[in-house]
Length: 255
Image 1 (tube, rainbow, N blue to C red):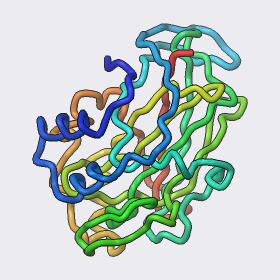
Image 2 (image 1 turned 90 degrees about the vertical axis):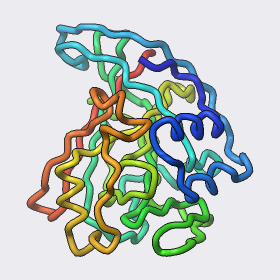
Image 3 (image 1 turned 90 degrees about the horizontal axis):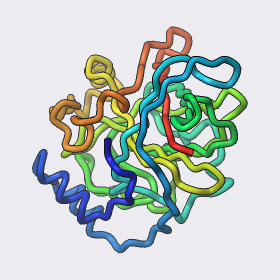
């Protein structure tokens, strides 16, 4: 289990070099001035078994692994404008309906209400909002945009919901999503979400995504995801109503 200590951009570079060559798009992002506001964090590792009812989950839950928040976090732009369900901002792609459940490993796997969940990820072509990115379509300046970023507070079932698009990919990383959980304004978890390879393959063969082609880097060889798929791989299934997909994932923190 990883220790939840904020990871510097230098640490991110070291980790990425250990698993795969870091490409210019990541080097560019990692070399940018550090203008983000670093959050307060507090997390402890652990595992617990719960067999209760009501607002708890029956069974064993394990603390979700900690991962880097970079290279594309956007702390300075988070606020009420990003407290929304639909995070697409006009971005095209296969619809992705997401439900995240937050549990407390330190309280018999009880779900947490009023926990803040922040997510962010790239568009179908591999570009992030809030940054100037270089990719297969050239350089795009998205510094004034906030597409595919959002935050919500968990309800009485410990859940938040978002509507976005299925993420694309960029060189040097498997398909992924970033997520953070705050409790009482204290950062309890920074992690990433992996996607099933068979779904990635199907999505990237569709007309909306095939121009970019398949991602050659897989979960099993990704320098960040490969050792933590047990609790970072989401469940993703086809959604016949929307023609897209539905994602469910549980985030376990220590409070």
